Every structure is written in C-alpha cells, then in structure tokens.
View (cartoon, one colour):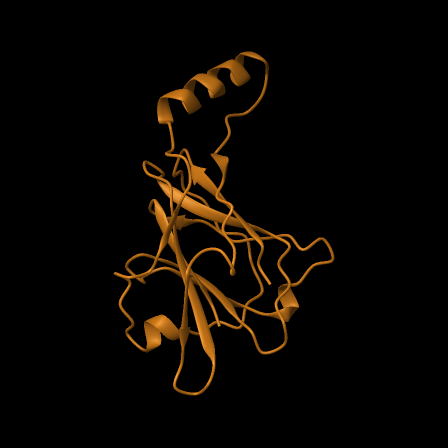
Length: 162
C-alpha cells in the first residue's frame, strides 16, 4: 500500500545520470491499453519557485554548501484518498494519479509507507508516455517503507499501480 507521496521539483536539469533501480521493465497497463489520461485526477504540489530556490542556493553557497538540485514538496496523496481506480477485464484493478508541480523542470517521486504485495507493480511515467520507470515490485519493498524514483523531465508524472 502506498500511503504518502512526495514530489521533488528539480531546480536545475543539468546532465544527470539516473541511478540504477531494479525493475521488471515493461509498460504499464494504461499505456499498453491506450487508456486516456484526460480523466486521471491530479494531486498538486506547491509550484516550484525558481527565484526563491536561487536565493536559497546563493545563501548556501556563501556558507560553503553546494546548490540543491531540487526541493521536496509534500503531496499527501494515497491509494484510498486520491487518484482513480479502474476495474480491468481480467478482474485486476489499476490505480492512476497525476502528480504536478507547476514550474518544475523535472519530477522525482518519493513514497513513504510503500509495501507492494505479491503480484502488484508500480510504474511512474511522463505525461506523454515517452519516459517510463518501473515496474517496481515486492523486490523494491524496504523495511523503512520508503522508495524513490529517478527523475522524469517535465512538471508532471503519472503514477500507476496495478
């Protein structure tokens, strides 16, 4: 179960290499079946404030710290209070939610209290479906319940749980 979702709005899209994440690959059901994204509910994080981030980074630099590449913005979205559940023809269920932070150059999602049951998979993908992360499975469960994704370019990401 996924209880809380956080979003990191990337401040600078420098040339970055995504850290390796173990996943089973493939495409989420929504993309394979060509499901529309028009009716997917959106959870909004605070807009990314580039000017405020630049001020914070300049203060940090004056104090000998490196600039932050992003900011963590609380979204507070979960399977039971956000998103859209759909019943599938095979008897399965799919949940989808769009997470958006206006002004963000990239999104990186952080999950708290994530425990994926056997047979479940989690994907995160860009609004246009061109960038896909996952499928994440029980292998990705951690005792802490925390999990994070690599960055996806753009101010929105779609989370899909099957």
